[in-house]
Image (cartoon, rainbow, N blue to C red; front, side, top):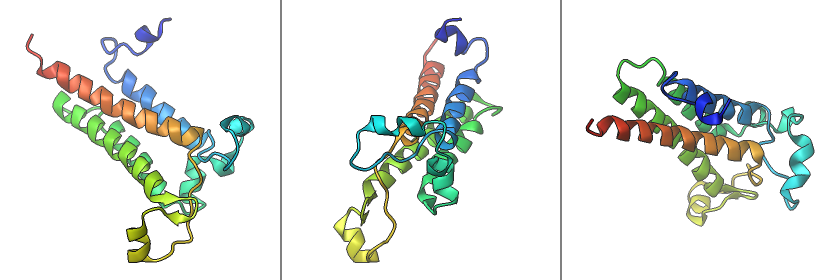
Length: 165
């Protein structure tokens, strides 16, 4: 079966949403969220599907990296698009959830580095923060791609709905 047929919106308009959300959840549950610092990315390959302690869900709820929950919030908002009464509302949920999650994860990656705050004004305003964040790994990148994909799907659907017949 061709991939285009698998995600065909004519067969089931929510199939693509479900596939994106499942990929996003897999990013949080099954893939290593952080890469090994100072090591090439392929050194993390043995951790794929075997590093429950490095998974995004564990980093969020066990290791105290609460800011990673913004990606999960984006996925939840995107799921809420399924079953909405109007396509316009469904598209708004897809766009909002995707943008919130992707932008939130990107902003957290920019603001929180290996030694805490990366912006001196935040360091001066809130003081030294002992929380650090290593470079993003496969799970984080897949989560950001799926969230961006959900936003683009919503934008695409909204653009097609506004086009005259």
